[in-house]
Image (cartoon, helix red, strand yellow):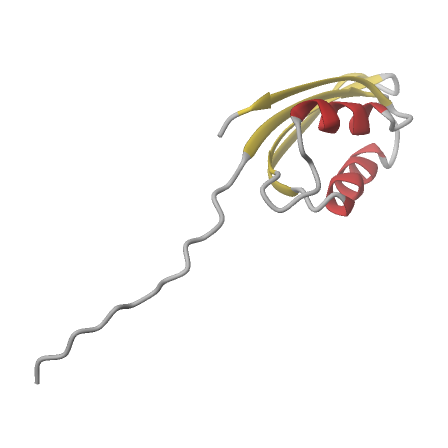
Length: 97
């Protein structure tokens, strides 16, 4: 039997990847504070790497995140939001895709 069909397949939302580099105070709970904060903005964390630069003083986290489903409108908005957190000392954001 010959039939003609049109299939509509939804396309996934394209990821909007952003690299975040944050210098933070090295203290208990900072990573949890960062991840909870991003989760509240509906930011999907793809990868995270955090290291202590100076014990009990300074740490660094690099994250790749997907902001396609978040309330983030510009990289500057994300920088300003992260800077509002008490343990955050410095923020850099790079748009990847």
